Image (tube, rainbow, N blue to C red):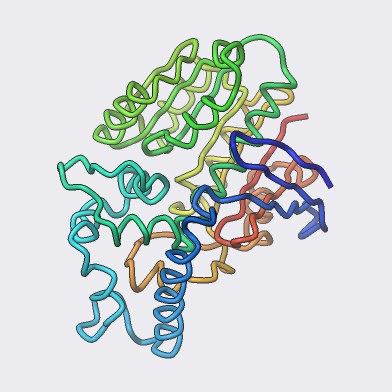
Length: 327
């Protein structure tokens, strides 16, 4: 068992077993909002979301838009939740779930007390922050183990906040070695990520923001040949892609990866403890849940050896985070 300090939170990694021929590491992350001062608030939110999950399990026919879906009505009672719904799905929506202390939405509306509490303590919020800390762990370890400049490509990373947080928790000298490129198909998100980077004063060697369709073969090939990235994170795209496209993207990224380079990506797990709340109370569309066996088959289709792949799962069981490392 190893303990690694990542930023202000201690991340404990325990290598537990192999699944589908891939090592699975169970990860314990101290959530930012697991502090004693939030204990009562967390209990209230978990009681509320637990009630909704139980209700939806007992009513499998109750889709998000169903006129009698009381969980949808209750979820979107707070004024800020109604405004937040306009950003679903997308990087702005996940930004506020990940960072509820950032109260002001692009519309000018502010997160109210109930909405902030929901984002702090809902299983989805905790899961987003856990996967971000795992990304930080894997990226930081690479940077500490490799001297010289590092090219980091973030694909469909939304606001970029998890990447910025990871960099801000590194030393200034290490930050000055990083050349970061963030790409997204949505120009609004690209501009939003640029704005957040400026506000956070991350201070990397270079940073580039680019609108690009990573599924376009010609654009993708040109980008990868120009950047020659050593770290590629794809924290917000694979779970929206059907199997064929997900496998094709993995193969293309792996082909251009240098020796010791890392692809870090995530996929929501079917073991998500409040999956019904995610789908039918929040109504977040389009996410394809995959087991480790499912992803192992994608890796096979991409002609990537399973023995260069590892899986990291936080105790909240919301996401599996995968790392592919080029020999």
